[in-house]
Image (cartoon, rainbow, N blue to C red; front, side, top):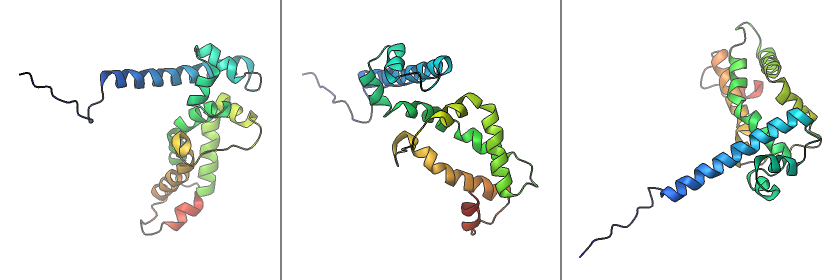
Length: 166
């Protein structure tokens, strides 16, 4: 008699892995299409349908990955938050906290002018969800507080000063 070993729930199946790879590839394709079309036509002249068509998917598929067109811009911005934190961390030690943060953000912005122009060109209120992929944008305040705590050698028991500076 042959024994059949049941699959464990811990090991994902090959089919599940392929599906995850497909989803990530689709997501990357959508971001690449958005970046390309925004550069060619501008943010406002590029529709969600244009981005979806360029990526080879339907508009409905685009909205399964991103809630709106602005989310395509924010996703790239969020991926660069660690670099922004480094810009602030690397500012001259003699700079006061507010100046270090402002100058670090300016330095970062100058390195990413195209993306910053896209963010600035978007009209209306940014609706950033409290969870999901945009959560790092909200959590950046904690990161910034930690950078400032390190920069100014604030004792660990003083949680307030770096948080206020951030």
